[in-house]
Every structure is written in structure tokens, then in C-alpha cells.
Image (tube, rainbow, N blue to C red; front, side):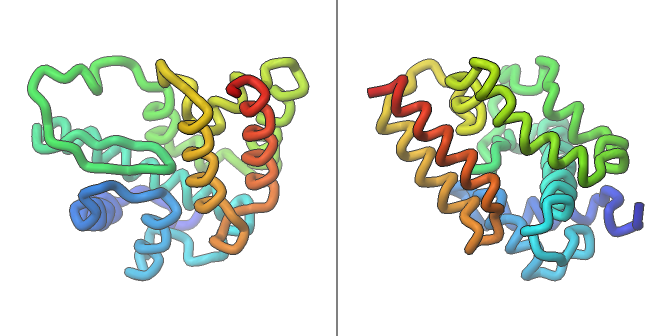
Amino acid sequence: MNDDLAPSQDLTEQVLQLLQAAPDGIAEYTLIQQLKDRHSSHIPNLPLADKLVLFRTHFLLFNALYRLRDQLWQQRTHLLQISPLSIRLLPYQTGSAALSERDALRDYYLDMSNLQSTDERDVERLLTSFWTRMQGGEEKQAALELFELSDERTIDLPRIKLRYRQMVSEHHPDRGGSTERLQSINLAMEILQRYYR
């Protein structure tokens, strides 16, 4: 693995500056584009249409985000809300249990061996796992997870449609997304429309 894929404190500082300039939050794709515009040496300056490049770029950014979240929590300055559609700095709240529970995603992204050991075949498997779960009868849950709505208590069709529009905008091939991801989003929407009328 080359050195430009190693984690760096410099990347977390760049991310923090960009988040401070976006108080309403910022989507992952926009944040990646802004880092590329700044010529960040820690984000591969390659087209995101390549699945392995997309995975590595996503992984490096989320590694930096989780390291930054831990750092801000320890300094008691901010809470960092992390999701692909909205990454946002929030004011620190005393007594919040935000980081006290075990977070499987945090563990995954902070383990650099997951980046180093993931090849193109693995990325392909990750992308197709959504489709496999659909065919295995878990279509509603898989669709809600793809839309990052599975943990929300109240879900209705207007909320799903809003999330759908956000995801299509972010993952459209014209904006650096992949056709496969867009197909997954469209299928998830079709499924959720059957459950939420």
C-alpha cells in the first residue's frame, strides 16, 4: 500500500476546517470534492467511478472522521455527527453518552488493516451484498439500511422520498457516483414504496 493511503493528522485538520465552514452539515461526496479541490495529498486524486478508488477514498475519509470525532469528544469541544448524507459539527453536550457505546462502524474504519486487505473483489462483494439480502427475503430492512433509516423510530413515505432524492443527487454517475449504486437506490425506493403508502 502506498504512503498516500496512510492515515494522517493533517487530513483530520483539513476535514475540521471544511466542517467549520459548513455549519449546516455537508454530504460525503461534497466533502471529498472539497478535499480534492484543496489538493489534499491524503485523498486519491483519481476518478471515483473506479470502485476500488471509491472505496479507498470513502474509507480514508471515514477513518479521519472517526479519529476527529474521538479527538473533539476528548477535548469536549464538539460532537461530530457522521453519515454519508450529512457530516456535521454539533455543540458538545455534557453528559451525552454518544461515544460510550460500542460502535461497530467506528471500529471498522479505525482498523487500517480493513483498508489494506480490501481488494477489488471484496469491494464488489460489498456492493452486491445489498442485492443478495434483497433476494433472501430481507428486502425491507436492507432498503432501510441503504437509506440509513433503519434506526429511525418514525418513518413515512415523505421522509423516504426526501432521503431518496438526496441519495440520487449524491450518487448519480454525473456527480462521480456509480451506476450500480444508483440502481441499488432505485430498487430500494421501489421496495419501500410497497411498504410505506
